Length: 147
Picture 1 (cartoon, rainbow, N blue to C red):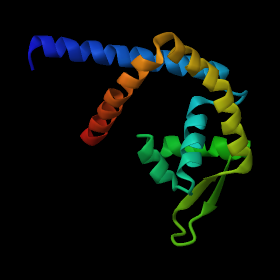
Picture 2: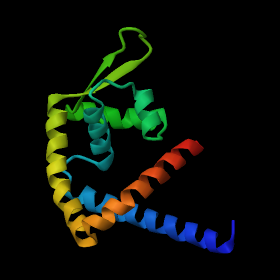
Picture 3: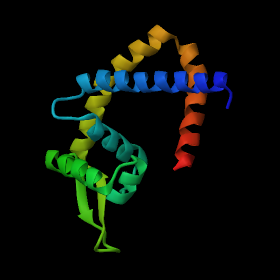
Picture 4: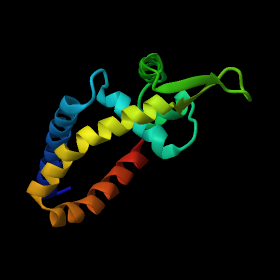
């Protein structure tokens, strides 16, 4: 890799990491009371999946250890936002589904997050965001293949 390419890569990843940190902080500030960003992420994934997932599947999806995911799932279950049941086919496993109150909590979080994201998109410009999205998606896919 040439020095120019290396500098470009470092600059790109520095910007991505800074945007990630600022975006997380902005979103975390407006989440409903008691909800953490990790909670919203799991609820949003389960809502989009439309099906139950095992804790191991969720841990893999979020690139977390099973222990970290189990901790998050216990908090979500305690809040009443997910249902955790035994896997009827394999008693060693459990299955997780979003509950109706979890769906409502996700909707409330989306309602709080949407204006924050829309404001940033408006300031940057929709055309620029449309141009950036395919590049960011491709980078995400390439990075997911590294593991």
